[in-house]
Each structure stands twice: as structure tokens, then as C-alpha cells.
Image 1 (cartoon, helix red, strand yellow):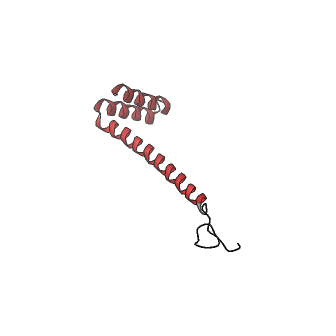
Image 2 (tube, one colour):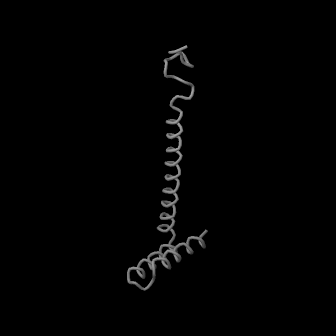
Image 3 (spheres, helix red, strand yellow):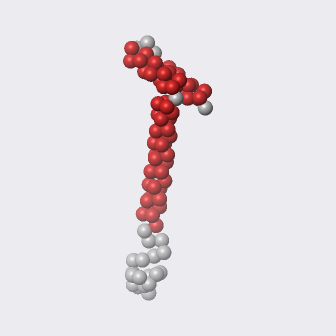
Length: 88
């Protein structure tokens, strides 16, 4: 039986040959799809910030205060997220 294969296409061919490569490719595609999803979420949030006047104003004020050192970045982010939540 030496030189015989499972598929008839060659001595090194088996039904599971290359399956690890396929699984790795599927895992990479899933990872890319998830990363793309979060990129789209980030873009949608930024779009909402730009298009909603009240939120845009809060974001601009928070940015100015953070730059001036009168507000921490954590508090600035919290103010923006709270405004987004309330706009809901």
C-alpha cells in the first residue's frame, strides 16, 4: 500500500491535509472581521460627535479644558460618553 493515498491524487494527500492552514486562515478572517467591526463603531461614534451639535459642543469644551489642564482626560472622556449616552 506504500504510495497509496486517500484521494487518489498523490502519495502525500489525505482528507485532512492542509486543514490546519484552512483553520488558521478562517481564524485570521474572523479576527479581521472583528477588527473591522470595531473600526466601524469608532467611526460611527466620531460621526455622531460631529453631527450632533450638543455633543460636539461638549466634546470641544472637554478638549479645550483637557488641553488647558483644567480637566483630566478621564473626566473629559466621561463627559463625552455621558453626552453620547443621553443622546441615545
